[in-house]
Length: 266
Image (cartoon, rainbow, N blue to C red; front, side, top):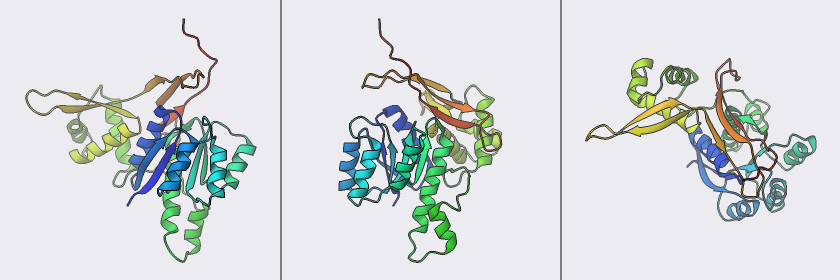
């Protein structure tokens, strides 16, 4: 059974990116998406949740008070804290309340995948009754290995090959990607679906006469204007592929959401 993940973020657009990243990793399942601490507390009290992705800046009950209430109630769900705050006080408080990881916005989606991988490592190690030192290191993050977390069966080389095809083309089908990379068509489609799930590619459907429509893929850089309901204006939330990213020059996918002064409509 997949590990159950609850996403707690009051921005539906950002929560959707988190959800697609979770589903792309494998062995994880999004159990729900909620926008408030109160709703999150109600869910974890009434159903098994293995991991919570928690935005610390929420309307109503903020993330840190929610974390305190979880621990005081004896709810030991693993938590990945996601926040724009990088103050030592905030980091210390969150870690002291047992958070698995602390990620500062803006961040590369690859960094979130690493955090999800850390959770999977810990969860796998803690299934055994007695632990060797290597397994304990995994639980304590002392043996954390920095690597790309991809769905089972996919490789970094394959991702890069498919990215190269998308970069050289306006739009392509999975058959064309298969022919140009040497991958089997079903495997090429899996890579394309992974890139779509992590917002590095987009997909649209074209009619093909009386038969079934076919899917076209292209490399994607999107900009979205997000204006939260509580009245604060935000700058464009940019979701882009940065060729100067980490991992030996491979592109990295970034989430960047920044506050700007309040805008007034004429």
